[in-house]
Image (cartoon, rainbow, N blue to C red; front, side, top):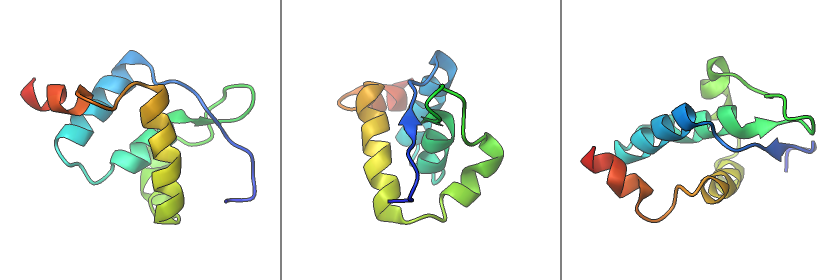
Length: 88
């Protein structure tokens, strides 16, 4: 969609916990953080940093949602993970 190949890396524990809390609180920067933390090149090097969150969120929303759905899946954030964060 963006004309480049990107790869996804799993979130570390801290990132996963933060993202779960962002999702549980309806935080508007959920997509931006998920993408900044997960998108990488083929060597696993981050493409974006947290400074890029707002810029990432300006991209096509349909594409963001598609990529974030893969991030959620590979990190096991579906199901009860968000509900569990709301109860923490």
